[in-house]
Amino acid sequence: MKFTRIAFIGASALSLAACATTGQLANSEAVADPAAPASAQDAAHDALFALFDDADERSLALNPMSALFRGDMRYADRLGDYLTDEYNDASRADAELNLRRLGQIDRSALTPTDQLAYDVFAYDQRQAIKGLAPELLAVTEVRPVNHFSGFHTFYPGFASGQSAAPFETVEDYENNLKRHENYVELSDRAIARFREGLASGVLETQLTIGNVISQLDTQLAMDIEESPFWMPVTNFPDDFSEADKSRLTTEYRASIEDIYAAHERMRDFLRDEYYAEARTSVGLSQMKGGPALYRQLIEDTTTLPLTADYLHNLGLAEVARIKTGLEEIKAEVGFDGTLNEFFDYVRTDAQFKPESRAALTQNYYDIGKQVDAKIGDYFSLVPETPLLIKPYEEYREQFSAGGSYESGAPDGSRPGTFYFNAYDLPSRLTTGNVTLYLHEGAPGHHFQISLAQENEDLPAFMRFGGKTSYVEGWALYAETLGYEMGFYDDPWNRYGTLQDEQLRAMRLVVDTGLHAKGWTRQQAIDFMLANSGMTETEVVAEVERYIAIPSQALAYKVGALKIQELRERAEQQLGDRFDIRDFHAQVLDTGALPLPVLEAKIDRWIAGGGG
Image 1 (cartoon, rainbow, N blue to C red):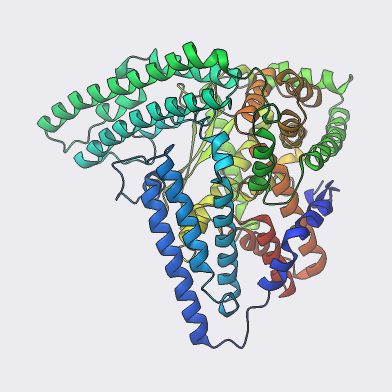
Image 2: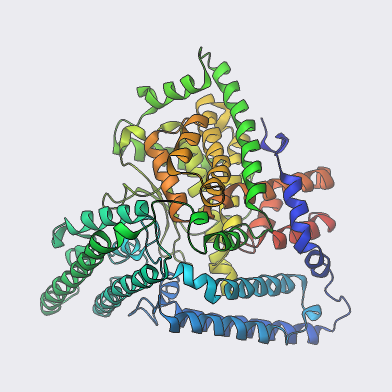
């Protein structure tokens, strides 16, 4: 079954919803003045990109880690002044300045590509200002940490020497020590923000805080020399002098002791003071200021003017459609029983479980080779950045998703990494391996993120930024290419991809259920177990992720439906002139756009004959 022939529920509704805010954009984008003198176009282009460069410089100074992930080491001795009023005020002032300067540039004098960059930049600045409104900061800054988005989960890996931060020179090692100091400050600052929330009545949930306490307990139970923070000491470059090695070893031990002390302060505060006061409810609708925050998060995530009710109903319709596909597989393989009994069979049968971590790793290597052999039939534009495949480190695997992607360096010197989860190995069903690789690896996140980073013609905010609905929508769309590539001719691989698609459909239902309709954690778990073949371990991790990061889970289906709708439109209108490789290049070659901007771009491409 070719994915473009599926009757995707809600695609036309998404398009209609977008018209409310994008009709004027689409029309204006298509008409750069063809009579504009080249000198006027050049002047407008130069002014626009001078603004982009200046805005990027100011952003990097405010966000040193963004610079470091690009390989820019100018600010490598600090993490940033996050969770301060000064940081928020500076970010707001920057966005306001950017909009004022953008308004001084004649948009009609720009080329269509520059108009696209103009519109994305304007969109980004307006959304940034909305997110920095005092009433929203009052309900976000005072909840600085949860088990899914917190520096305490990110920083150990970042500081280990196995991430973006280089450890090649003595200065690199000393920069890391300075970042350790900044991290301790940030951890203590988070405690102060939590105290503000205690005073204002805006609180995290007991569920998320309990998980954070467990995470900190796990980290604190490690001996210093077994911790990720110690790994740079065990991997000194050969050209370091013995004196430097001795000095740095002493300094690292003292600095890591400071980090452990900060983790103890955070753990003790959360356990002894905060937990008892935290919310027993799990949704934003039950938090002070939560309903307004969720409305804003939906807009931020989807880039479309959608309501929680619309998304909830869309999810229910998609869940029903995908269950029909799973019933068809049950009949195809000759299983005699109910659909839930079929799910239980796949959950429990040994043939669908990895034999070992090594066997699971090898399976992903094999899938990667098979995808590589087919990719040229669907893509003319492929990244130069290599892709590394590896399991999560054991210190973070328990609370990590089933898989994820970490971007490589823009110059290809550091590969992109596809991480898969080998925690509780019997719960990791091999039926989903192909679709997970297509999503997180190639041609999913690895292609989309790497191609944007490698395109030096794009302004930095388009190379390194992007919208979640596009990023995750592309990755979910990439999964569906497995039909055409022949991977899903195998009914068990097809079972895996439908189960993963069902996960994304259920996310629409569960995320809105939790944060707009008052669902409990158990309601969400029960719904997912009843409508999919996921194991309870997987479901619990997913539900607790949605509780921790509201709205992010909405991005997948909304974005994929839009890309699928645009492909269907292009196929119908271009007919024999349609080339899937050209379509993919159009979608991928300008970064992760807001969906209305992407739609306007593809419509222009179709109108131009798809060449």
